[in-house]
Amino acid sequence: RLRSGPGAPTTAPAALREDATLPDDLPAVTGTPVPVARAREVLLTGATGFLGSYLLRELTGTTGGRVHCLVRAADERAGMKRLRATAERYRLDGRIDWNRVRAVPGDLSRPGFGLPGAEYDALAGTVDVVYHAAAHINFVLPYASVKPTNVDGFRHVVRFAATDRPKHVQYMSTIAVFPPGEAPDGTVLTE
Image 1 (cartoon, rainbow, N blue to C red):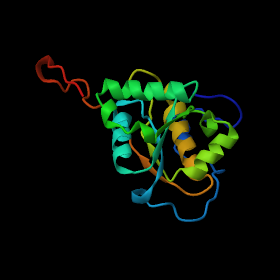
Image 2: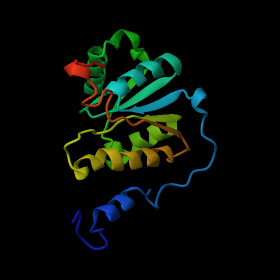
Image 3: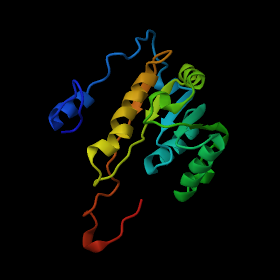
Image 4: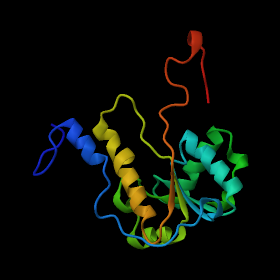
């Protein structure tokens, strides 16, 4: 049993099928999204991870606009501190235009990213394209523990992309850079 209660699926395949569908209450939007190549305002998820930090460097170097980074943090200052620490870890700090980066303290796993309604609406009315690279990757945790970020988070990104005006979603997913067992003779592989 995965979940209980009226109408809840009782088998893993039924629960997974249910989780693989988008909600029926997504907002209907009209209009044409801004072409990705002309996007001036970008929302990036996962910027405190390996892939996300390199995406941040690339986006600040190519878009010419502002990159809003959704970051689990108490406030914008703490969010910027996390972004900078990740960039330093991967030796990217001097290669990111920090004047064009804005930390958005929030939580991908929560509806509306956990943002106050007015802030969420303002962000949805500003952003042209979403680069979604956030994920909770752990090979030993059960599905239920990674679902809030990986499944529900994706649903929240799709809802955001359909809020106010349509936005393109660029989705990236990785399991590992170098999977276990790939190193010959116990050689250490790094990023």
